[in-house]
Image (cartoon, one colour):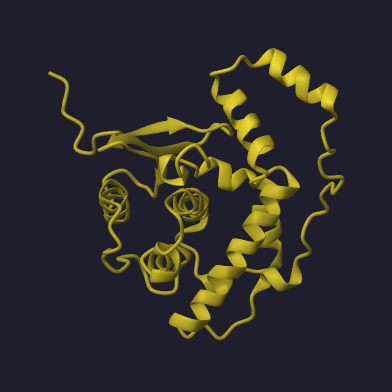
Length: 221
């Protein structure tokens, strides 16, 4: 008889690099959860992260790992109001990235990290945008450690240069390109709706994504 999963929605999966990770995917009262949990399976860190994810609760127990380790500091950071005040989608993405760090070097002492460790982690992230995002978040973790954990050392992130990225931006669509898009995406499709809202209102992409019935006033948006 197959044993019941004590953590519904959680499973050990293989990521794009062939590594094993714990992924949680559930929908609770219309709220979709898709995040990675710290390992190993069944550990206190995993249980705490699992319970927080399914309840979306700002209440989280203190870290149970060794004080001063990367896992200890990150786990404590994830329980603080400055993180919990972020938008749910931002929290989910940020927690996923910090879980990646915890899974790789969670047992290391934060004060032992040096420049070459940061560069190696950035190399493992692949593209320059992802590497620079990691650089920024590791810098935030060191700053957090100074404020809350009396960390006195220097952050090795200050010794590592951010990666160069292409900054050409996106060109403005011509009328011909807009009509091409309309021909491809029929009226009533989500893509067409997004286009018409952006063109019709002039709102930014992130504002259009948050639009709903609450933005309607009679026949006007």
